[in-house]
Length: 276
Ligand SMILES: O=C(O)c1cc(=O)[nH]c(=O)n1[C@@H]1O[C@H](COP(=O)(O)O)[C@@H](O)[C@H]1O
Image (cartoon, rainbow, N blue to C red; front, side):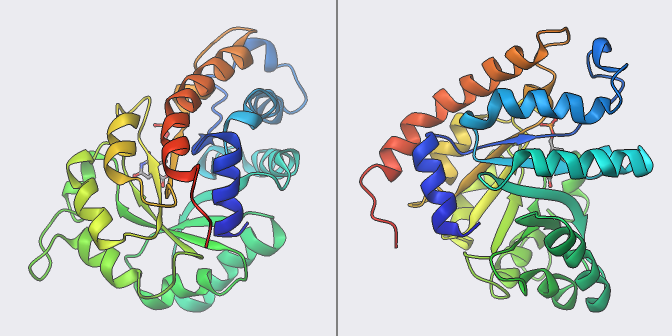
């Protein structure tokens, strides 16, 4: 999916919500556990209940890999059920020497139909650039993450600025706003304004709303750009909004509340904008 298509889809749905599909068999409703593929059965109901309210789905591969080949099969079935109308993110946090990164990119972009993969920048240019070499595909590079451990390296000073700022300004030169996004945690509100100065045009993937306590309003006020420029991810806050047989309608209600909070920002920013 191109940046222009993504912006159109945000405008049409009045939403920049990304639903995180991180299924955990210890948490899915008991009545699904007897299904032949309970992970897919769970995801399918969540997808069917939320498709019109979100523009993206993010699958964290850890929640599939931990179930071995059956988990991977459920991931494949899930992405094919989602189809082509949503921006599809493989949250795999990859990045390795160049030829290995190319194989990771092929796995998600050629074997599977993902639009984007999350990438850790620690190994530098040759580990990130292979993900930028696929037409119409995206790398989403970790900038300032939502977890407490962000303080261990990302917030440490590196040559007169925090390391994450160096990552944003250096990595933004490796790609462009049509193939590169950055992850910024919703819990890092005090950094949003500074981040927008460093990467004014890039989309930001913002996890950490819901279970981790980040504020959708604060992100929207401080980090939206003239394209809207945000994908706000919520995983547990939507998928486990309900625990019983009505979990899908509870998920829909949670997603709808986020979408309704987003609509005024979409209207304000994208209503009269002519897309470049
Ligand atoms: O790359 C990510 O998506 C990510 C980066 C980050 O800084 N923090 C973060 O929570 N995530 C992921 O975003 C999702 C957040 O899930 P919830 O806290 O359940 O909404 C999980 O898949 C995390 O692995």
